Image 1: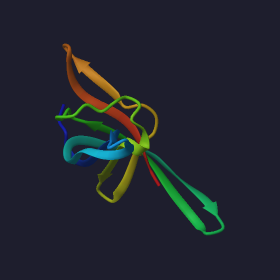
Image 2: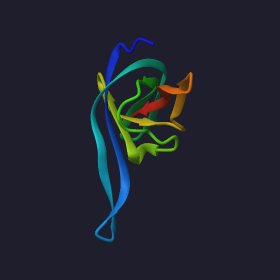
Image 3: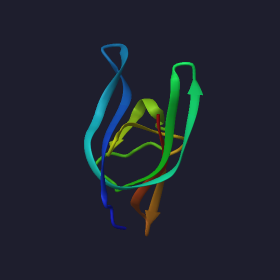
Length: 110
């Protein structure tokens, strides 16, 4: 698979440090990937219109494992004009011949 894009990934996890639960950044940096637009919609509220977009993101494997149910608190991505991309649902690992080939997810940008 050819990864044409570069996605900036920030992977965090909750750990107990000194008896208190804190969020620790495990990985932050660029990861090769492929990004495709799925749809966008505009919702109106008294403050004005708000556009949200959904994108399909495919990431190549990197040094850290992304848990399937990482959620928006644990995984934040940035690509192109979007600085706040969060997974919507599960992050699917895809395997080929028993090896991790890529991660696939639907992300939402608001």
